[in-house]
Image (cartoon, rainbow, N blue to C red; front, top):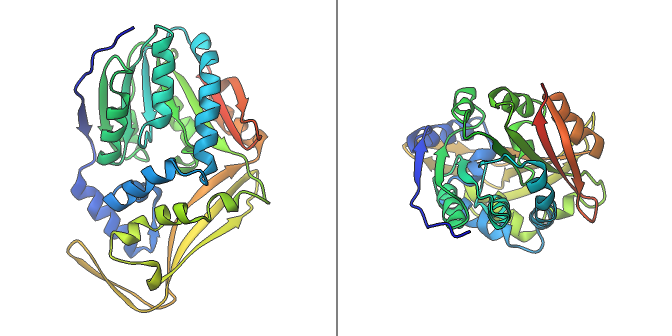
Length: 314
């Protein structure tokens, strides 16, 4: 089924000046939230490079597992007419869904949702020719008012939270928040990485991922000669674990963030958002506790990545 190339527009609920103020405030607290790793040009470039890097196993697992599962999803959700990619990134995972549904003669409308204008543009460009229509929404998904703006898309919308993104949105709360905005005919996709004490850390502490993690600091003019970027594996409780990262200043540093001058003392830490991992039963239980019925449970060939297809529980 041929789909004409379509221009796209981006609805802005979160302005660049608001993000800049938030970034300065986050740095003043010495904690950089997940969203700031996808905002500035250095970060976007590092993220795109990371997605194609062989050493970043999560991207490969997520893409392969999704591609293997989509034929079942096409049969499972015959009424789906819209895909909403939550934290769409550069759009590689959403594109797989769009192309598979298109090849099944059931093309979807596409709404790309992200914090980053640059990534929205990349995702919408990648989807060109695979979707019935294209639109982007730039927002902060942690805000309930912004999330509510995604409600009521199409007759049956697939809300896709892919690429181990659930951990960035708060796995304890986000499924329930998403469930509250969904129609009974909507569906949801979540994926996540299985925790492995022996191998999880090595998937993150490599040169390509270090460049990505350093992105927000590089945008401020810092290099790894100005301090040390650390990754730590922190086994958690109740089946939720994390790879923590933080920067330790190697000397006194004077930084300029917009109009704000900041001082970072030698040995002072700047904490960064962690990457969340799960014990397998806990991953599915989190989704069910959020008000969903899991209709399809899939696992990567190596057993390290999970995919859940779910419907709102009545």
